[in-house]
Structures are given as C-alpha cells and as structure tokens.
Image (cartoon, rainbow, N blue to C red; front, side, top):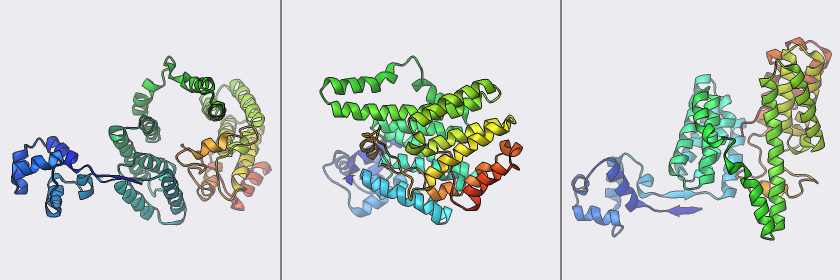
Length: 382
C-alpha cells in the first residue's frame, strides 16, 4: 500500500479554489501571513488543532486536507471485491452499501479500486428495493467515474472510467450522454484500432516472442468475446428479419463450437443463446426458441458445476491464464453463482416465451434450472 502526504499543495489549492488571499486565511486561523506561506511551501506544518480548524473552514476531512492517499495493491483490491460480492448475496443490501461507501471514502484516491467499485455497483444495483434507489446507485457510480477522470493520471484507468460511465448512462436510459462519450473514441476512421496488432509485431521484432504470443492469444480471446456479445445485440436489432437472424445464429454457433467458448466463457454464450431464444419466441418460432433455450441451459450448467465462477484458458489458449491474472479482478467473475441463481426464474418469465411456456420441453428446462434451485444466469455488464 502506498501512502502520500500532500498538505502544502492542498492548502494552496483549497485557498485558490475559494479565491482567498494568504492574509484572509491567516486572519481566520489566527496566525501570520508568513505562517500560511510556510505551510504552502512545505517549510512548516500547522499543529493538529489548526489542522482541525482549517479542515472545518474548507469543509473537508482532515485526511482530505492532509492529502493522505491510501493505495491498495492488486491483491488487496481483489480481496475486497470478492468480499463485497459475497456480502451482497448474504447480508442486508443497505448495510453492504454503507460498507462500500465507507471504503470509497477511505480509498478515494486509489482510482483502480474506485473503478472496481463502479463495476460492483453496476453488477448489483438491481438488488435495490425500488427502481428509484437503483437509479441513485448508478448515479453514485457515475460520480465516481467523474472523479477518476478528473483526478487520475493513468490514461488507461481514465479510459475505462469513460466507457463505464457511458454504460451506466445507458442503464439509466440516457442514450444522448452515452453517445457523447463514446462517439469520439469509436470513430472507425481512427487508427488506434491497430494498436494491438502493432504491439504484437513490436514484441516479435524485439525478440520477445513469449510476450508476442501471450498478447496475441489475449487479443484473439477478447475479439471472440466481442464478436459473440455483438452478435447478441445484432439479432435483437434484426429481430424482424428472421433470414438474417438465422444466418447470424448459424455463424455464431459455429464459432462457439469451434473455439469451445461454452467452456471458456459460459456466461457470454448463455447471453447469446438467451437473446436468440427471446427473438425467436417473440416471432412465434417455437422450435427455434426451444433449441436456443436448450443451449442456454447447457451454458448455465457450465456455470453451475464449478464451485466458483472463474475466467480461464484452455489447451488452445494456453497462455491466457497468465494474462487473466493481470486483470484488475484476476480470475474472478464480476458476480458470483449465488447472485446468478436468484435471477434465472425472472429470465425465463420473459413475455417472449409465452408461445412455448406450456410446452413439456420448456417446463423441463425451467424445472432443471429453477425448481431444483441449481442456479441461473444474468447478463453481465462488464
């Protein structure tokens, strides 16, 4: 954990923000202008009583005034995240919220941790008792994204915060705000999309073949997940064009089978199969909807058979595990199995399944996944 004290800079910054002269601050504190000058240049520090008075004057905590910045290690961030995910499934919701907020205040300058708290909120806000409370939680997470973008010096973390905020905006129905954030960085004409390929080539040219292979595997894995995730949206966009939907489903199912994605990332494949089942059901295509639901169940069973849902590689992606370990949450999934279990019955209650709800096949799927309480799946946001 890294700690830094920035008292002198903070006194100067807070004084300027409030458009005060050194004389005005000195008069309020009962000291000389020279004392304030020495505080701001780091030549001396105020005593504890003056610190308390000054924090009250500037309406900040003493920690904020002193500039005490506590930083968590990657391991500590993962441990906190895992603990909070468990808390959301086992403890009263509002008590966990207060715990999260307390940690956010304590580690307000540890921006990678704050970003993971955004992920945590985004994946659990639907547990709120009312829709309005859920919206407030998302808005709170958006404020954390703003704080990260305004103060963090890590461009990678800032970029993730921007994308997170856009996603939160969509969850709140604020499409215009999401477009404003995403359009500038998603322009197909931008050259940045080639950066990953160039990095692989640079590693190879530098003779760092193991790094080149590892990054190439990670990029291919991410591209596959993005392809499947995008296809789930694609079939919804073309839900009235069944010929196009059929062709999309045929191609993506082939990719899922070819790369064994149901074992690698069953949550992603479950989302795709669920979305296609809903599209087919909504169009009265009973046979196709049931077929998709059976594949959905198969993906769910991959999620449920493991004691803990984790990300991992396989014999083909044999360098992926080392890359996954470097992710902010490592091998952990954003939600645990208990949370997924609670949401499956609601997923199968979708109105699109009205045309097959009374069939023997649908009731069997519902019984296996719900009545025996073996678990479920919920679309992930991150």
